[in-house]
Amino acid sequence: MMSFEQGDMSEFEKTGHAQEDGDSSEDMQALRQELDAAKAKAQEYLDGWQRGQADFTNYKKRLELDKLDAIRYANADMMLKILPVLDDFERAAEHVPPQMASDPWVGGVNGIARKLENVLEVLGLSRIKAQDEVFDPSVHEAVSSVPGPDGMVVGELGKGYMLNERVLRPAKVMVGNGEDNK
Image 1 (cartoon, rainbow, N blue to C red):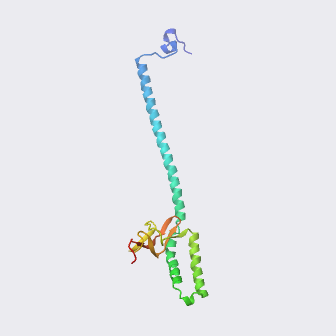
Image 2 (tube, helix red, strand yellow):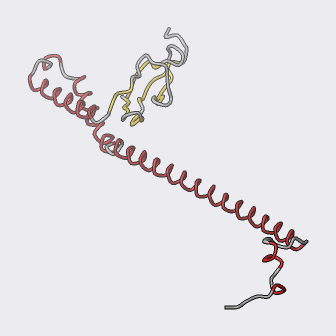
Image 3 (cartoon, rainbow, N blue to C red):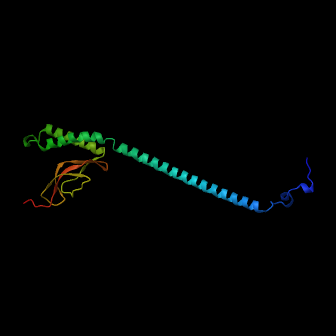
């Protein structure tokens, strides 16, 4: 073991604390600045990480909503292709000659049309009310302007449908222009 003479001890060892001179004070100041800079950088990294986490959480929520929408509206194309068939059934029912109205065959065809309409309703399809409603361009497509109450739907040329809360096919309508029918 080494032994030290009294004269070999440093000032720190003799007094128990560092010698305080100008260099020490400058070193402390520099260390404090480094510490403050490191804290600021750490806070910047924490803020960035938190923003990244929030963005990722929002992304996951958007993805889930998009997935639910895709499921809810997956049948839209198929329904758009079936609607003309339903329209044809309805036109045929409107033009049944009176002498055939009680024929069981006509009743069967009308039953098929109702069954098709019920299946589409179960899948989320609903009719857009148009006749005698205020014209709404978000659900009605104006085909012509005719004498009648201003801005009111006075005739329906084609039925409109919604799938859940979205317009699948707007109703084709005639809109009153405010002129009298006289």
